Image 1 (cartoon, rainbow, N blue to C red):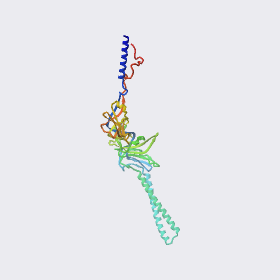
Image 2 (cartoon, rainbow, N blue to C red):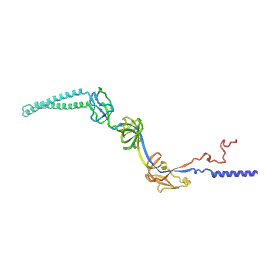
Image 3 (tube, one colour):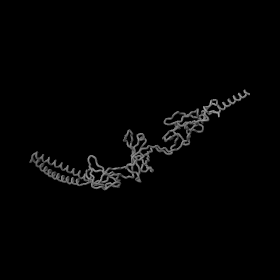
Image 4 (cartoon, rainbow, N blue to C red):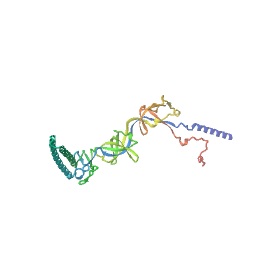
Length: 393
């Protein structure tokens, strides 16, 4: 009886060991081939920056003469036309200078005419040898001196008249007054620097944003690219624009190098005001209906041994590499075959395929292994259980 029990127990252990070896999980049974179909997407790459809204044309109106502001005919936000009177300076001093210059011109003219007649007579007598060379030279000297004084007086009166004209200040362009820097009765001094009286902006329906783009992104920016931007004054509105100019001058501040990009923007509702801060998005690349695959597919390298476990056949290409192209593996039924493709732009985790792949292709992305559940962890039934694993109640 005892031998029979021992024999039954031995048989049970043999059966248990056989079942364990037969049913234990395979190291490769959890491996699957991850694939993905080609898809049509819209690729948009962008660069962000901040900038300032400015008028396209902005003119600072000043004066070249010193004096007192007598009258102002324009104020903030006034619409003005080119040539319209916007300010006048006190002309009393300038008018007195003009009258003095006119008197000086008349005196110089009289002296010039007298010396010219005297020189003419002396010259005639000198030719007849009736006057000495000294008298002739003296007459010629006085004539030339009077002529030069007369020319100088004529030039001086032109300058005085021009200064008098500068006292009448007109708008140089059609536009809107966005700044007025003086008041009536204020004295302005035109010394080394022309004082600014008004700042006039041209048509405010056409604005521009001057954005500072980082040096790492400036290489992607080009004229004509589409731009969207927002301003804090209208957080729910998105404004459209176009890159009009990429300026070559670099600006360095706190070791950060930026370049100015000028963006033209239409402003029909006059919402955009000079000086607003704009948060700019420049679309450096936009492609609609682009054929794309996961970027991981371009890095996939097939393992024939593992794929054979999945009943998949790998067809190696006749050529190992093709200049200018990248290798991608396409799944057709139970076969993986290599294709050499031309790639384009990347967008997130997808890469555009320009040439070499059809719309209905399925590409291999990678091999994945499913994690074994805790209950299926490979463990011999003959190994002792961990502490507490076989407690008797």
